[in-house]
Image (cartoon, rainbow, N blue to C red):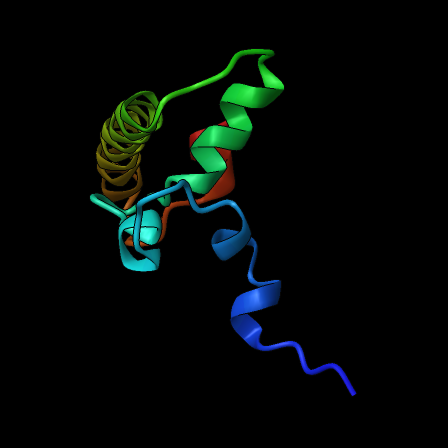
Length: 89
């Protein structure tokens, strides 16, 4: 009977580039993982390098933090600690 280990079915292992360890392939520098950045770029119809995916993750993270700070200010002004969906819309 053929046994398949978790590593054989793991999408990150299958997409690992030649010469990179699994840890390097999954490395996340910020809060956003790299693999979804590749998917976003691919959906836009382009190919991307690892550097481009990292840059996109950094840009999106910075924008998300800016939006969260502004939303927190608006929620605080309204007398709430919770950010509501209507603030972000």
